[in-house]
Image 1 (cartoon, rainbow, N blue to C red):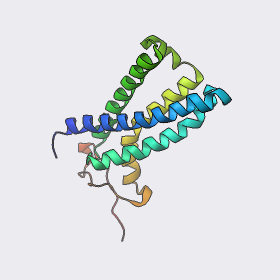
Image 2: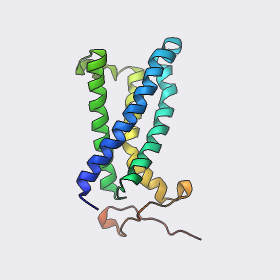
Image 3: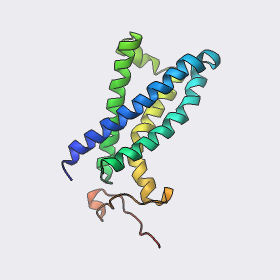
Image 4: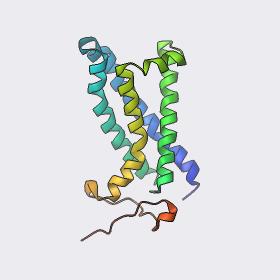
Length: 164
């Protein structure tokens, strides 16, 4: 299985970089095509459910592809690494492309559009954990790739038995 810490970091970075790339494409379309017509707050409000749906999907792909365990602490770590990675990428883009300081980037989060975007980033960070909860509760008609070990002491989420 390998080192769980290294796997969590790898999964978090992969998840964040993938979603950042999708967000970059969506953000470009939002800024160039939508925001000039409807304003930044409405444009972000239109983009948010799209990027959140993509984030949910990408989270599931990376968790499955890298065989990330279903333990709560593992999934929280993946989400935390993903969030920090995404914020670093966002700030780097803000500095390099828009020539804004870190302070200016953070101040932008106080606008309605910035607050909506930041709330979406927080949701993004919860998806690795929420994905395993949704899958283990029987949603989406599938079970996790690897059932977690039984017992609450490990921090695992129990998987209900499959009825055939």
